[in-house]
Length: 277
Length: 277
Image (cartoon, rainbow over all chains, first blue to last red; front, side, top):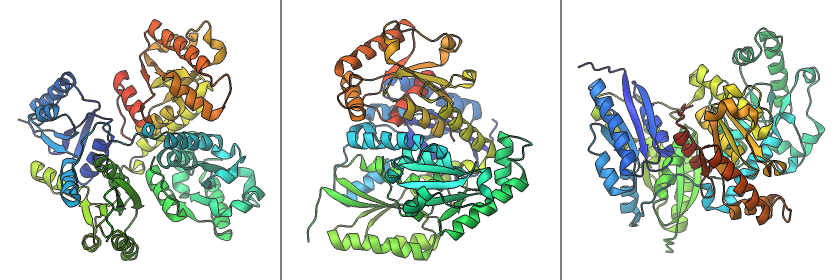
């Protein structure tokens, strides 16, 4: 029997989207040294579907000789009970905390399907979120400054500093209306703020990035170009950071941060409330 | 002392983005009947920041006379220990499962900051995700069919059936390249597939929606228009659904689903692998 201690098969099994299982599973596995081979099974609401999942889990066990890890969330008791008999280590991602909240608040839980946030249940929230995404799309990359007074935040930065993904994530995840505006090549010599930004100063937020990282990202896009050269990247960044300091615009360096981290840090620094969509 | 059993103050406290705390907290609270007044504190890495958080938690307790609920994830033992002394019910969102995985796999955990997925750690994944977002933006709403052979999936549907938010979510969350293409007004009479789609049939996926829901969404956009009329919505939907059936294109009804649910269902039905970004 061959046991590879470096890697583990991991299954996420849920009767909903499996987003909660995946999120918690990743956070847990992030603390362990083994590599996870992950597979997700959402909407496991029937015996038939469960049979397929169980087959794959048993196959993994047969193949590797070590029980795989299963992070699950299943409401229907019969399906739950069948899953628990599989040859795997099974972790109910909610059970322990639900029981503790139940005891602490002396309130009966009412288990239900579709526990992950569902925008459709609240029509206002739904419209807000869709409107935020549309607004942000229409104001991507300096495309328009129309209705800038409706913006929750205005992101500034050089090309490829992370403005677009960050803007879309903030719209999608937090229902924020984001304008993002690039500083481009020709601006660099006498860099100053657009007059249109003056009365919205409190909404401005800068993104910067290390020159080596920016070079790598731009090389990936336009290899060998002046635009992607270390010299050009350094020049642009020095000018833009000087502007941020001169104008007292808060800014963060995105080099070693994920889109999630950048967004969470901006919200925190800008004192923006998270609308939980 | 006034105890309002209908609502509870809830705090998410993390030394990272707090995304895991929020996700798990929502899922847990979704099973209880009380309304949650939620507040999130990310990046609580210092004694100073913790002092502010503790102050707010104690204030909530003083004000309501019931201990608030705290969902937390903190690595540094001293900060963790101080938080645990607050007048609240505190739940470590990872502890229980980490301990069980440790015992089951006989592996020591290595607690670390930034447990939520971080695209920056893997440069290839980072580029893939950014490329997917860019591709999807460039192929939104029928804007372009260039490089359609690179698409992972092509979403079809009438205006306002949920194509754009779904496409962006799939790109952002799963690193998929999505084309979305609307059926517009004039197409409706003799609806057929674009020739460009013929050799990509296996990538086509339809979105539909109930006529009442579509009318409400369109009224929100263009109140009183023909475009938003029940008659027009019914007409478009009937034609598009007939096309989906005729051409054997798989489709789902988005009416009562969140963007997360729509995306997860499409991935499942289309047999697409989730690239976990």
